[in-house]
Image (cartoon, rainbow, N blue to C red; front, side, top):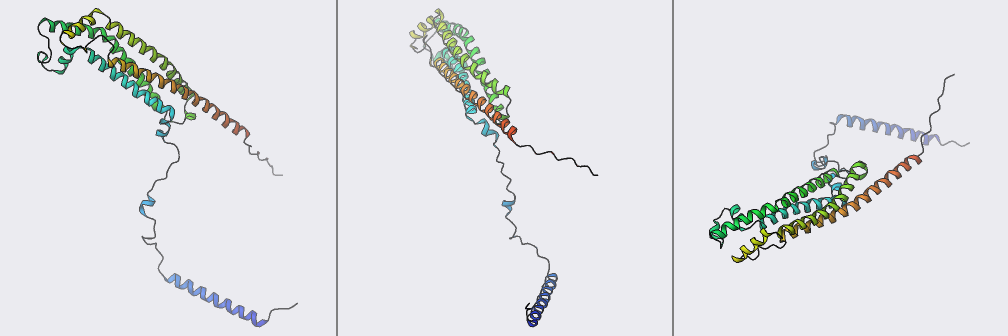
Length: 280
């Protein structure tokens, strides 16, 4: 069996001694140096350190601005438009004498009526406004109620659908389904009420009185404001129908999601129980 020459072994030992001495000198020199402190330029920029962690979870606006939420928001807006049009229609059809009284200007300088004609116009305008009063009060209460309830469902939908209670989703479904039917019926009743009021003798006398003074636009036809009320009412009904369909799809999607999660939990292998060992 051959052994390496003794001279080589001694050479390696010397090299080892030199390496040991060099390491010890490096340690002494490093210990004699002052400790290292990172400079300000080595630290990360301030704006990098202060950046908050981005949360990847969906925000409340993301859930509110879903398709179902956007439809409800549009329904709130159309309800507000119905309310505005009901007020505008009443103000326009209340007559020039009522508008002059509200505006605060001199009625004698703006109307071609004087004496008994002016007094008769005031009486007819007052009677006509009283006859239309149930329509404006009912329209205001109806549109305001549906606008508030729709807004409440919008605010309540700030969570993912699978975290919302089933009662809330079913309530939104029933509200929109019933709201669509009720709005169509309400628009029909409103137009029927306006046409019936316009067919009375008070409206006919009022139309002839204003026509003699040159105000032919003050007639007993359905006004543009009333037509706008019916138009926005039907748009609101359509939005509620669309919202009903989307809510049904959401409920089905949540049901499938819960069933799938339940199935995955059932198929997930359980960890084996540790065998109890007793010391002998």
